Structure formats: structure tokens, C-alpha cells
Length: 301
Picture 1: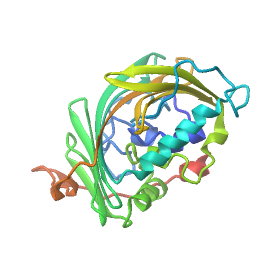
Picture 2: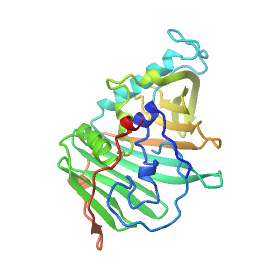
Picture 3: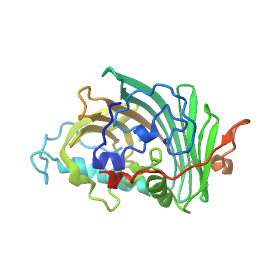
């Protein structure tokens, strides 16, 4: 299998949108990684791209200057990195929201051909301690449910689910899943962009490309680059700098596989209490979730 590690900033800030790493192979029993103790089917698993899977918004004048905007370097327009920071700050301010994300993620087949996997993710969040993520595609629904006391990961097609005690906040949950289970929480890391991290340090190029339409929304288009990845981000203009669309291209592989996602937001929804309660389907089997047997991402670097 063709497998590489996705570069730092993108891996931390973007990869949680739809688990596509080897530990989160879509052919596995769970959407969220093969860290659960489970039986293997012996099925062929196509080579996985290191392009992250699936969530994003802001605005400026179309075509206002190329690289090297005011306050920037010849390759980094400060307006682009400032837009990322503004987006992150706004997303962290949201208390209750729902995101629908349509995704297309390339995997690299053994013959070197890219093949796009289509998925749909729905993320429901009520800060500080409620989360539900459901990812559908290929006739299956996988997901994670967190109620402030424990998390449950499930795979309806395989008929598995696993539960474990969890920290009392979403921040703690995200860290616990990544550090102890190597489970990337779908879409959640996006909301930590710029949160005390020097994320901009890894960016080698940043440009403002102009204002464009993403479905009915007016969004500013940004192009950014770092070692191993080119990425584009459309951020909604106006008072709500929500991400509208994102494309990440893995430049470490000859076929340049891509991950593309379009986000649709619902702010301040009212969720029923049952939203964050997991009820297994009839016949579903609870299995043991075992700690990961490899070092966390940062150490693996």
C-alpha cells in the first residue's frame, strides 16, 4: 500500500474531518480507525492517500493584489493567513452548531490510479460536552457519539460498536481520542485552528484569489501551500467567516490525490437530548476498544 504521513499543520488542523489515514481506513470495521479489537475480513484494502477527509468561511475584494500583500512576504499574503486566524476564532466562538459536509476523497489504488470515495458527514456539536458525528457512504453509516461521560464509536454495516469512559469536555475528548486511541474526531480539529498554536509557521505560500460563489454563498478563495500539500479554502464573506469549501492536494505522491469537501452550516440549532445518546441497532455487538499500540502522531513524526 502507498502510505505516507501528512504534513504537520494540515494533519493537526484538517485531518479530523473524515478519517482517511491507515488507522482510519474506510474498509475497516469503524469509520474512526482500526484501533478497536476486531476480526479482519481478509478483504483487499486499496492504498490510502494521506489526504485528510472531512469542514469551513470569510471575505475580501476580488483580485486585490497577488502574493505579498501588505504586511506579508513575497510568498505569503498576510490577508490570507489573517483570514484563517479570523475563521478559527469565529469557529471557536460557536456554542451550538450542525455541519453537513459532502466529501470526495481520493485513494491511490495499487496500480497508481486515483479513485474518489464519496461520503457525507453530519456533525452536531453542543459545547462544552456534547458531540455526534455520522458519516454515510458505500451503503454504511459510521460514527461517534459523546455525551460528556463516555464516547461510543459504531459501524452499522459491520454491526459493531465500542464504548469507553471519556473526559468531561470536548477539548479533553479530542485529545484523549488522538493520544490514547489514535482516533481522529471527524471535523473537530478545524475548530482549534490558531488556538495557541503557531499554525501559520508551516505555510510557505498564501494568496488571496478573489471572491467566488460556492452554491448560493459569496466566499473568498484562498490558495495556500506547505511542505507536502497544496490547499485551497473558500471562506464566506461578511460577518460569519465560515468555511464553505476546501480542497487539499497531496503533493508527495505522483498522482497528486485530492480531498474535497463542501460545508453547509446551521448555527444555534436546538438538539433533542436523544441526539447525543447512542442506541445500538438490534443485533449489534459490543466489542472491546483497546488502546493504540503506536505513538501519537506528533511522536511518530
